[in-house]
Length: 49
Image 1 (cartoon, rainbow, N blue to C red):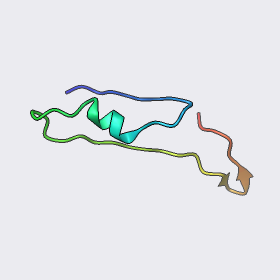
Image 2 (cartoon, one colour):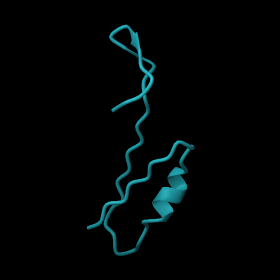
Image 3 (tube, rainbow, N blue to C red):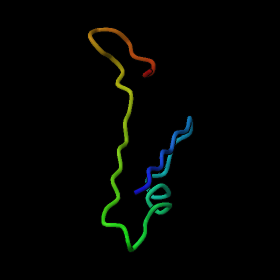
Image 4 (tube, rainbow, N blue to C red):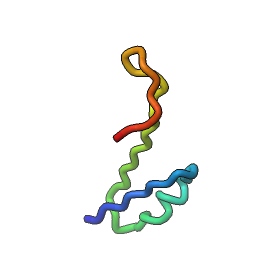
């Protein structure tokens, strides 16, 4: 098993990320796309740490 992480200040292409790991020998490809919400408990959110 291997883990690949893509992080960028620019928009990422899900298709490009998936194509970089697709392999007929793999049983699955799992992806997660997270975004930052604009408000939390009444306060503006500008990023995550």
